[in-house]
Length: 227
Image (cartoon, rainbow, N blue to C red):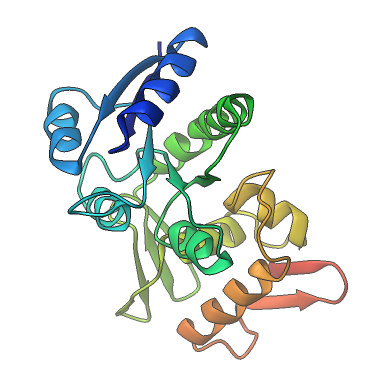
């Protein structure tokens, strides 16, 4: 049975989510703050975390950042829960490493659907961790430490930039459509700005100091990396 932790400081919402998840066959535990969450994680690593952004004290962004930078728990899937509906807030959460987001007010069925969708993507992530390093030309990706080294120099990348680069390298010599990239990196039902992929590709190229030797644009289709 998948254990799901909910971090939400509004007790009524926390109880509603826990009740819905428990009735759907999951083991749900609710917490009012990040400190309580990390105490429980030390005892048992969950299958997924639903994390509210607007918390008293340490907010959801800080908790997300801490999880993504902590060894042995950095790969826990996280769905952000927020009352914010600004595009910037959603993109910020995803770029920091969130797997999905749910905007309040939300329907219980939508929440359960998103939980199932994120959990379905877990096996591919676990398979990736089995490899220590992935090398391509002068690029080295450390999948355990989530670091990128280019020609001997480490390059800082966001969580999604790292996943995007790995996805392109893993499928080198294959043209990937924008829809394929969106589905893999942001989830099949991501409803963000349609140019999100293009923006991230542009950012990757800048960090790779890419003159198109790494990432090739296939006009009206998508992108690819060639040997």
